Length: 163
Length: 163
Image (cartoon, rainbow over the protein chains, first blue to last red):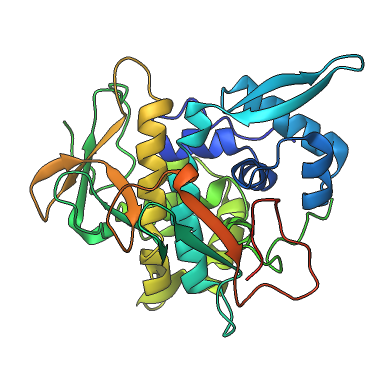
């Protein structure tokens, strides 16, 4: 079954989701952020099929999220290292972790605790406005068509204003 | 093909990804945030198959992200309205939009522009530390096993410390 091509939609959510590709990809990225760089280690840690992991890593390399770096010759062996684009995705995962910790954890609490080394405190991600620094809530945000929205295409919802 | 059960993993990313379910679900949530509440409107706006949309909406209702609300009787008609849990997911989408706007937009710029009504400025989401308010970068965050991590389970990566 061919899946829908979200990459060409005028929507940064659709494009991101297309790149993530499937359920495994955010977890492959998690491994990269947790310092796992080698195929066998990722495979063991995730319990993922080798074919699936190969595909997901190839996609992430093709999309410029990971670099494939030779770390040993004869036989050639490669590590997977986050690029700037890949590293920049961390805040999205951090926001997802904060939401999951709050809404999907049991009474025992979150499975993983994050400490912000920069300030020395246990923390969770907070998503704020780039301009005023206040936390973002859906009801405080208005969307309008931007310069990258194709002309003559209907807006994605009734509350989206034309530019 | 039965897919992997991520919901039971001790990982808020895996649990969130399990709930999102597939590529369509974040876009169904996008519609809800854009003020689209009715099945036919979502179906038209997304160009999604009716069966698929029915399944995704049912999952989101079952998981407590959306409420199914009767708005007309004889014939009965329902709207889908975000719950607190669903509304609270907006920051995750906002972080995803910010990343996609930066890394997946063409030269023409982002497809959608967000304005923060609270402060009156066009904005993007910024993910910061709940404690010190500084932007979060992966290299500044250390992960350790939390109270919800099952004992006798290996940590998900070499840099994750035991509690």
